[in-house]
Length: 171
Image 1 (cartoon, rainbow, N blue to C red):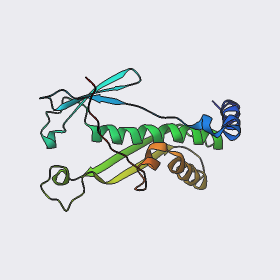
Image 2 (image 1 turned 90 degrees about the vertical axis):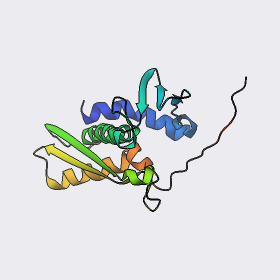
Image 3 (image 1 turned 180 degrees about the horizontal axis):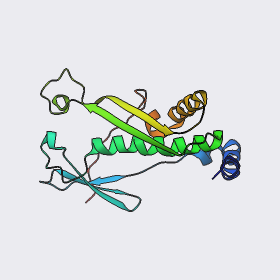
Image 4 (image 1 turned 120 degrees about the vertical axis):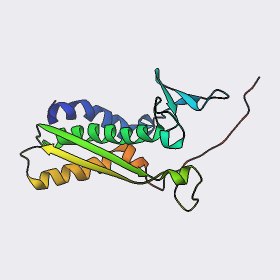
């Protein structure tokens, strides 16, 4: 796909969003079913099913997906798709791009061993590796805009509102 094709696809969508801002609103939903006595969660998102469990450093056996791995994978996936779209829109050519994402987590925080440590990642690092003849300035701009428009990466902002509530199931 080239920049003109991408623009042709996105232009009517953007115009609709300008005319009707409510049309741009989307709620993503996932469900986790947790059975009593189990240390796993059965996830269901748009027909895909994943069984998530404890990481081995938290007592799991490693046979199930780890939510921390899935978070790092989500950052990599979103950054990759965003990079492709931004590169297309800017006309930045590359033969190949690879994004290595790593997240550092100290399990003493999540396991309650040391309450002074955070429960969660202390840093997430993205390394973009290009096979490209593009000028340095163009790759810098590509990285800047990829970071700016990567939904998952931007959602890790500490100002994100998170609401938790509970209710009893109707019987």
